[in-house]
Image (cartoon, rainbow, N blue to C red; front, side, top):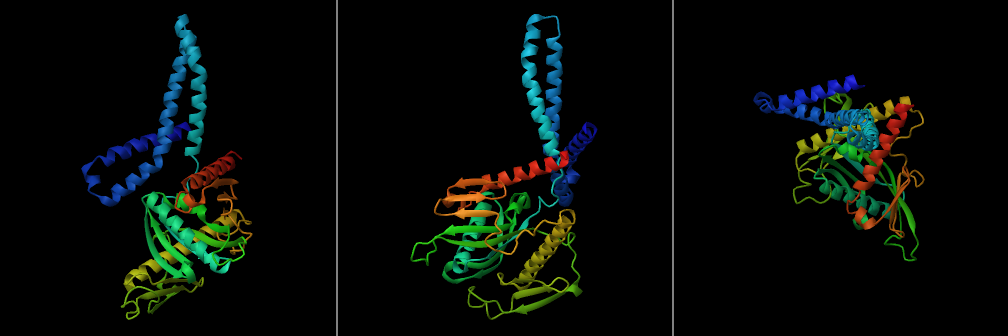
Length: 355
């Protein structure tokens, strides 16, 4: 393992030298690729260097402890326990850093939110989730770009599809996929009874053309007039795009942009991401045949998270985590929950690696 780590450290130093060269700085694509590679190696190299430093200090302390100078020996004996404890921590960090990374973690994402069971209240909850992720993206300095939205009555959403671009977006948001359940008294409920509704969230890694090539012969593209709000010209010019992938039956509609070309580009991006997610799920099912798809059917029982308004509590059922303060959570303060899910994934990978 340490031979491999030494090679990684040498590659990291080589990249740092390359990034300082003028010919690399002027090549934007190469500069970007090297910067991404360095970022992927940084945590491993940092832990490796710390491990080397602690090992050296421990060796020196042990030599002091066995020396002829009583004062220095006492000092060495005093330092040894703390250094051994620190060495154990660093070794654990090294093991974690060496865990296999999800190759899609650095990807941008396409998020799809749809109202599930619960009628009007489900659509209102879907709108709440959309705002929650929009506010979280703002807190993370990510860029959110709406692809398609379908409003429902009284301010709810039947569907919202949007792209999120930034640093390690998929790595942070991928665990949001699944059925989100809400328990609260609907605005339309006159008796004060608590209702249970759901919305589904799908987080798809954004697929580039090199990730998912689509044959023009496999798709049908329809152009039609956009509906809904958007100004006096929105219904006069056919700008909305519907793309159907014939082999799978997947259909994507995009009508948010005034430009037909831009709508087509967005729709193709969604189609590629859905096809990539489909391929990823098939690969996962090959190794875990009993694993369900990330969204499920939208039934009340298929939940990853519950938002309980009477108790002002959010519960993530996958890790048994409950936190209070729903107002802040729905305002995008969800990073502590996301971090707990990331740490749980690391622990699971570590356990699988040991097994």
